[in-house]
Image (tube, rainbow, N blue to C red):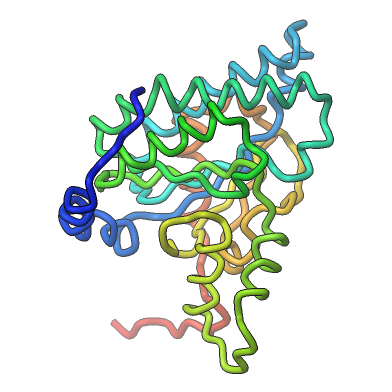
Length: 260
């Protein structure tokens, strides 16, 4: 993908043209977040190197993106690499960074054609230069996408995001949830706040949050599945959504029966 350079006038015109599509995600569709876990264990179970499991996991990413819009999802957040993942072997980390770069370079053009907007959350000062270029190009090329907002969390920490937002308060004593949400967006390199997560799915059989976007999942429904991430696809996503729709979301209220 070639680097995109636009004049200030072009950027302003494009930003104006995108206003409708950028707000569409806030008012339509569910926000689903997925902690993609189990790729390494999948590889071990198949007698493969862990790197091959991570590569297989990207096929699952493509399947889920393909199914998301058809299943009523407006925002899809994929938790790809946490800040704690830097503690993994250097070779594995380097391989993951290359996989992320390759995915953005190869898939972004197709996603743009399908109206998918791409955003990357998390710190950028520790990412390799080729990945940073791929991130910038994908975000710029997909800015007007209105069919689905795909957010990839790379070098992300929910606790770190909250701490950074708190540091931006500048002594303010009255802080609304909306203001704090905007501060969180600034701190994680997001373009703007998005709706809270409706459904959080974790694959791989573990039942923990692993420092994912903690502010956004305050009222999320949680679905944990034993399915390892490379085996996850449209069928599993649809099953999680059925479980979600079967639940009664009260948000602290008592729902009175509707009189007939």
